[in-house]
Length: 492
Length: 107
Image 1 (cartoon, rainbow over the protein chains, first blue to last red):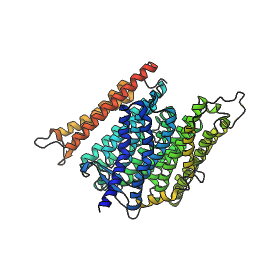
Image 2: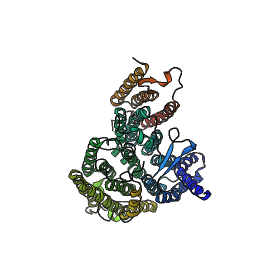
Image 3: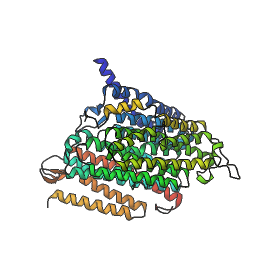
Image 4: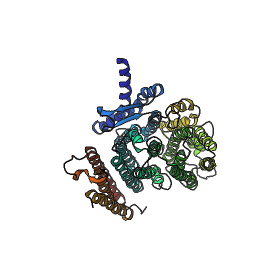
């Protein structure tokens, strides 16, 4: 019994530390002398991988876990909820956040003037992301979301040019507008049901009254704005393209996903009792439009990073298709798409950042010869592209296959067509970059600065993970089988 | 007209005014002020609560203690609003220093 309690304690401590370690480390960086910064940063990159072990064992063997903070139970206190979906997201933060941080070690050396501004923001962003994936309380989610938005904006602005500052301010103003819409929804839900706990609310909202549906609409719009879903995506391309490489990677891989993750949570867990089929069709249509519009916009961009940012607009659309498809297979496909897109897109942004770093520009019409100068970065870009296109054996292939199978089984031909068309368009914009890079007819050979090995290695590792995610699917999908919202034995 | 309806209408009016300002103002400072007006509207809504099938503001209800959770939420919300406003102002000052402009649209 004591031993059992010890193990439980261990899991709780690990989960809480996933949020508090980066939070405390960020504060520590502001106080410690510059020579200690590298150690703090390296610990914060490595520690999450170790901290994830006991929560993984917990979820794999015993299922989900509720943590009551400070001994105050749910209606009053703030709870953390760890289940298989949250666990996978935490792994994603640890892996993508860790590898992008390795890339940033080269660009923003800890302790240097640039590093001193960069790392506290980065660590607070990681803490906010982990808090959002774990939190079971609507208001706590609001606070964590503000933390994520503020730090994301700060990191976009860090370069300090007028363009970056404008992109950051626009992102911030729209983010604050979304937060207020979300907060009105929270106010309505609290006054109608007297609780803010996601899972207690599920019982309270029942079939849904007008107040609940109004709140649901406000919160959904707020999350679409934060998640940059068409037609509320206008802030994204500038912000993601202007940010430094590792920041773009984190923003596209995780920060916009967190909004869609929360949308899924509210839609399928908290709002499970509501009849939202009509709204789901509308949101699915927005997602489908995002897939097609984003890919076409990516096709006409003249700069590499802006193109990759528009590709994010397109890929986010697939995550919305889960709302109308809404079954166990589509859920697995959508979660797997979220994971593999995060890996592939982070790799792509890091590779694009390396090209920008080496050439001093990222204009597509002047990329000729990059294949000889930057083979590793271009290779990483290419194999990340394989996952975006959905070619086997990549994770993107498996995800789109599952989504497609779900759409065909439901005879939803429209969604199936969007899935196929989106992949074809992705192939076109990825090959457009590769074609530009392999062109050698330029009179003057490109001059390229050497890229530090950490920057190459992190991009390549992420791309390989995205490629081989197709092979490692079995344990991930087994986890989702035991904890998804669409099972005969539905949990809370 | 009950007290709480006054609060609700005031909240809706403030939110509308703020939203109009946010969308039409060109100067970043005006946009920020508009967002803060909207924030005030949301906080007002948070402390107004439906009870006994009649809308009453807890803070204004005689005899009963106000709902501490709603108060705590508003207090946290105000802290967040102060932090975000300060941060946005810092970004605006920096933008002015770099480009001499305080508007978002002249790229």
